Image 1 (cartoon, helix red, strand yellow):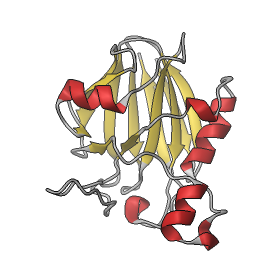
Image 2 (image 1 turned 90 degrees about the vertical axis):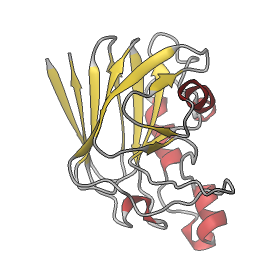
Image 3 (image 1 turned 180 degrees about the horizontal axis):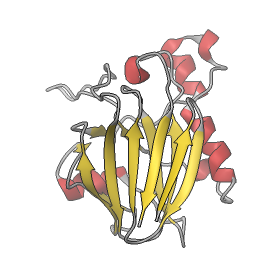
Length: 198
């Protein structure tokens, strides 16, 4: 069985991926950051942990073969396919507050991923405190030799995808990033597609 979900530009989405199913996240138009958090569907207190994931993989980026690990040190998902090359797991999500600090007070009221997460998590009885540092699929965040990070032009092309196999029932929560002040979306947020398969 296959479930297809088209997510319009700038909007959130969530869905359950059962153990043994795969989720394919498709960057339909290219250069679109897709902020994503995974939760244990049975116990949302267990959720994606960027520190455990980086430590377990020995890498700062996520790609084919990466293990997505929870805050309890358990394997949640494995990346089984990736046509883009690497995905950020350090930069976190944009917010109205960070927009203001980075881009000026006039950007304070622009739509942001943190607000998308708050809206979507509320559908599952979760709130602001349940937002953790997320995966930024297709977001290009080079790390310099001195440890500095920059958000650069996306490296994904139209139709690029990442596919993950679930090792437990997971709740996937996505913010299709609305950021227009830096190049993570090519300054033009676009729709994406999610496919969940048995």
